[in-house]
Length: 120
Image 1 (cartoon, one colour):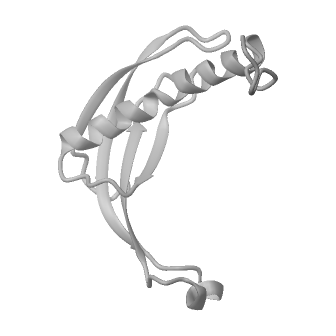
Image 2: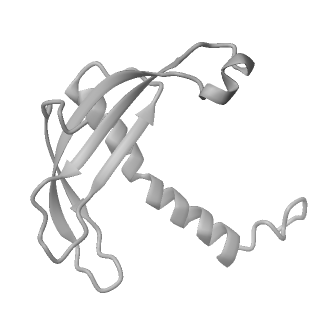
């Protein structure tokens, strides 16, 4: 993916984490479509010869040396025909942490799994 020219840059705010303060990050966005063949040892059990996936790369090229650089490689079956679509899918990916935190609160704070099938 690093050999594909960047389609553009995206500025994001990385929320604080543990002892690290929140920060801004500039990501180079690349996208391409690839055909992935089935595993060699199981090719006969797959009904398709290959799967076409769109790959989106979001890479922080010049991070502050004190932080771990962002390196996201997203695989999707959704069409990625332009930079705006790639940005949309990256934004969806950033919501992942909010959704995981929400599920954590439901499971640990609200004990939703223990209340399954019972009235509140």
